[in-house]
Length: 212
Length: 196
Image (cartoon, rainbow over all chains, first blue to last red; front, side):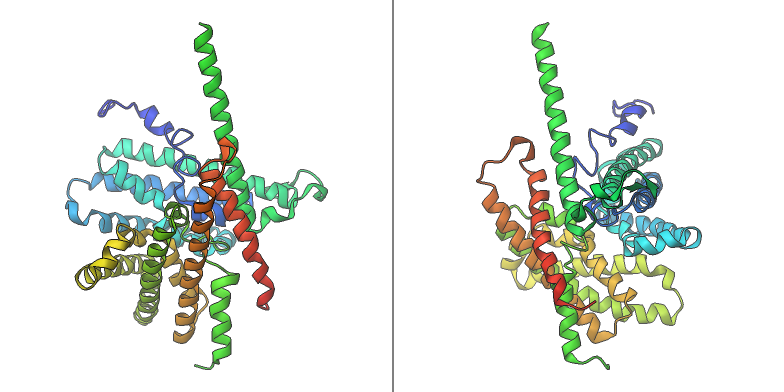
């Protein structure tokens, strides 16, 4: 089990964190990342909801993967994901009402987020339940990290706070960041930054190899 | 049916320009970045989306009457997703039989609409706002036209941008996001058009 496809459990779990990050590398599931990242709290709620749906639907789809006829697998996956999204929606309505209100239609829209369906198709339909669960968890953590990073950045530059805690005075605020266009700007700049860091690191590696 | 036509058109234009689906509500982002490299594919995608959006917006409104009548509103998410998936499949078969030229032009974009959140998004927006039948139609058509306008504009800019020299770290996706930022800023100017 541990080496079913030559991938260790740890590698499966960590793949989605940086190397195959759903947001910054695969550019999937961008709608919630752009729409509900106006504050760190909203971003955390959305990230956790998506994480839960991803991990559980991946686990479940992997359990039933051998009894689903190939032709109708996509509708079956969508129904399974929709069932778990409904549960998350009702749970959030019951326990975190104010968060449920501020996330609005973006909770039901987790169903059509490309990440859960993409992972079901690309991973859970081919791997065992434990690995699929780890993959969903890993991708979910990657998604959570990305949306939190953007949420914290936007809240910091909009109100000078993080999770409502005062960081700096409002004199440093950039007005546009909280508006819809700001979401595009922040993500674009982060993508550029990550690519720059990746380039610097690979250059260093090449130089290191040469000096040997 | 007490809303007059002036209000209905205001609703349509605000859905199209002020609350543009792509640039201010962020629905349908995958297709916005995925199929906007060329104007042709963007046009094909917009036609498919307009079609599916309007048909599913209307059918979801009718179906919701049944769900409410039977007190099973908690099934909304599941039912609407399956309705959209079935509709897309049906439209695909229909277009393939009746208009092979259009079918080839749309290519893989037609099945992909199932997971386009713009379609499910407009359904939930209509329901949350408690629109009546006419309002639903006008809001859905406005949203669909807004989608087409934004993605075609964006594709035009990207096509022009692809022959320019950019800083290497910004080539591709980062540049696309910065472009979307500028376009979105432009659309914010429409905010003054509609009184809140």
